[in-house]
Structures are given as structure tokens and as C-alpha cells.
Amino acid sequence: MQILVKTKTLVHALGLALLPFVLAGNASAQSTDVAWPTPVRSNDVAAAIPARDLGDPRVTDHFYAFSATPGDVLITVDSRNLNGDIDVFTLQGLRPLLKFTVYAGSSSLITKSIYLRQPEDLLLRVEGRTPNDDEAVYRLRFGGSFLSITSGPLVEHDDAVQAAMVEPAAGQKGRRVSSVGARIYEPPAEVAAAPTPEPTPEESTVTEPKVVPKPTARNTRPRRPASRKTTPTKAPKVEESAKVENENKTPGETSETEVAAPTPAKRATRRNRAARAAAKPPPVQEPEDSGPKLVIETDEGTLVDRYMSSVRRVTIENGQVVVLGKDGKIQRIPLASVVRMTITP
Image (cartoon, rainbow, N blue to C red):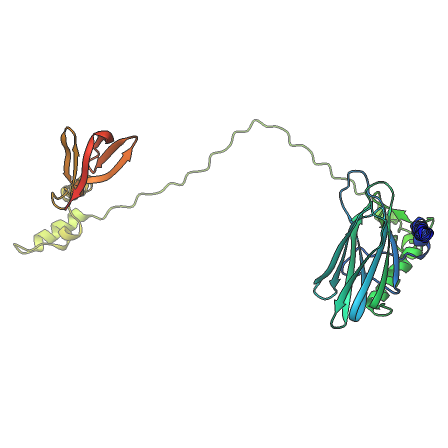
């Protein structure tokens, strides 16, 4: 029995040790775009997550798409040096169905299942990172009612991406990666090798800038604009017309000139009346001595006995009863000496 357990442990450790070499030969381009996940064409998928630069806190996401018939879908994860989560969603609407976590310190297999009542297209996301400078590897095995995707837009897009990655750029060996391990896609050889057009002699001619001579300084004074001479308009001769009307009018009759053109004395009288009316302040309405009364009695006797119509505000501040009248006077009474404070009708 012990020999059997040791044999299983040895086989599992050997499988994890050979996993990076298997990934190098069988792993396809892993999609990091949720809109174009990698189609799962078999029940066994393996991939690696490279280590990021020191101090980079980001995680890496790999997206896979597969189908399933009604029943239980089995998903087995075998990982090494990976800290992250495995999530399963519906492809339409991204409704979460399953989630479990893997740790770099654990080397045991994890198997989870999903029960489906109808055929579904599913999306699997591997989100994680390596805790050190070594890359993280993982293997996914599908079973139960799992169905692989062998045709459709996802497969065509995946084939086009793989073809673009396999063809290296002209004059370049291998594949280029960024500082965080992401692959850099190169343009096709026809685009990369296209020579840049050289400018023709006509296009390369440089037009010389025109030299504008600097104006010489002159001691000139600014000219004043010519002022326009305006001729004053003559005022109508009111006095002459008034004399003519006075000669022709009958006794006791008022002429139109007197009504239309008042004399300067009348104008001054009107202006004085208007100035007096504007300068006269509005009459202040005295409060009526009627209505409720405020009565405050203290141990020394009654201090306040006044109508509420003459009181603006009654408050208690800092141990004192403060009575503010509408005339601006303030009366302060210690609260400790107040025996009774009422408002009588």
C-alpha cells in the first residue's frame, strides 16, 4: 500500500516537472481579451504565465471558451507556482457559475463540477500570477458533458492570430516580448519590408524665408485725431411765440406755449418738490401696544413687562435671558435670578 502511494506521488511530481516542456510544444496562443477567448478544441489545455517585473502588482488573465450539454461538467486543475482564481461564466451575459482558488504552495489536483440543465456556451478565466521570478504553469482537463469548439468565428480568429505569431518579421529571429513577458506581434513581412519613398528633388527644395527689413526708428509724435466741430442747434424761440400768443389771446385764456414750455421758475419748483419727496424717509410704524405680553419675574421683582409686538427675539445665552427689542435695545437677565417667565395673552 505504501509502495502504491509513493508511486502515485512520484508520477504526480514527474508530471509537474515535465509540464513546462509539454507547454512549450503543445500550448497555443492564450487570449487575454474577454471579447475573443481561446476556443478549447480538446479536453486538455496547458499554458504558462510569465513572471512580471519587480514591483508590478498586475495579474495575468487567460480566457477560454467551450460548450457543454445538460449534465455535470468536470474541470480539473493541475498547477505549479501559481497564485490565482479559476472562474467559469456563461458566454452570453457573463453570469458567474463557478469559482475556486489555487495556491503556489499546494501541488494537489483540484476538481470541480457544474450542473447544467440546458446546453450552454461557457467562458473560463484563469487569473493569477507567480509569487517569484519563475513562471507559473497550469493544466486544465475537462470531462463529463464537456464539448469542444471546432468551428465558428472564435476558431477562425484564433487561427489568424496563431498564423500572425508564427510568421516572424523580416530579418528577425524568434519572438519579441515586452519587459513584463507579453508577446509583441510584428506586422507581416510585406508591410515591414516596404521601402519608404524618397523625396524627389522638387519636393526637397527648401524655400528660403523672406527677410523683412526692420523699420527705422523715427522721432514722430502721434497725431491727434481731428475733432469734429459741431454747430449748436438753435433753441426754439419760445419767448417770441409766447409774446404773439399773449397779444392774440383773450383775458382769462391760457396759451398753449405756457402749458408746453414752463418757465425756469416752475421747473425749479418742481425739482425742489421731487427732491423733498425723495429725501423724506418713510414713516416708521410704531408698534401697537396690544396683544400678548412678555413678563419676566425675578427674585428682585418684575424686570420685563412689555408687549410681544415690540420684541424681536428672546433667547437664552451663556446663562442669561437675552431680550432683543425691535428698537435695537438689548436687555440681559441672569437665568439664576429668574423666578417665572411667561407670555400672557
